[in-house]
Length: 308
Image (cartoon, rainbow, N blue to C red):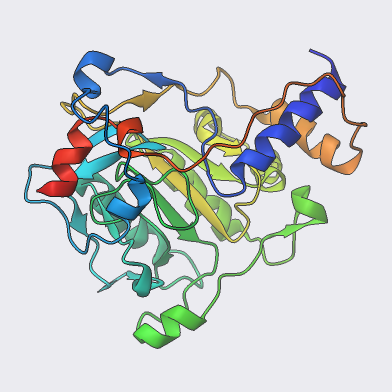
């Protein structure tokens, strides 16, 4: 595929990704007949208006249902607002809910973060709504309880008030539109990302292209973890961790595994195109904007989750 077309396709994907975090969402693993029923085929309600106002998780066994960007979650648990090595941010959004495996992962990673010089633990951004599903604003993914945003800002204290958690902001790690990291990027950031990517529960981590290239240049030992680090637009104030479907969860649809290899050459090409973008290809395919998902667009089980 020509370089011009590659870049044009990247720009098209970027427009769709500004609010979505939905890179490489090819579904795998679950039998669609099992994962998606049709009991809500005629339900025209806007799904975000159904799921966006539910205050608590459903009284069901934990289950990640459907796809990361077209699903919901049953039996979610809430990450405690404050723990010994973490704080959940932006509490007014009520997005610190997830599947138990995701909450366990966050707590485990936060303990590692607290071992890094200058880090008291983690500031945890958006996870999912209490029953997942499409959000009123922001992400198109984070729907099935298996996604979490981790702030790039190293916590200096873990006693922020609710008001402080609304007002404080993370810090950007990028310069030159994401082609490079800036002076705020540290060895500790790379060690934290390596720890997260080395966790077998993790399927993908999205971060801006310059960070991926920096990690490719930094790693001198085992490079297997780098395959899970995926360059994606934005993701310079936080990195986005996506967990694989939990074992024994038949309604969960995994995405395809990362391509073979460490992915460093692809990340470098992305950076080269940021620095020297070719003119857009007028023949490049375009993706029409997606309207709000209806309840009929979600797995049939999601109607029961919303009503439970």
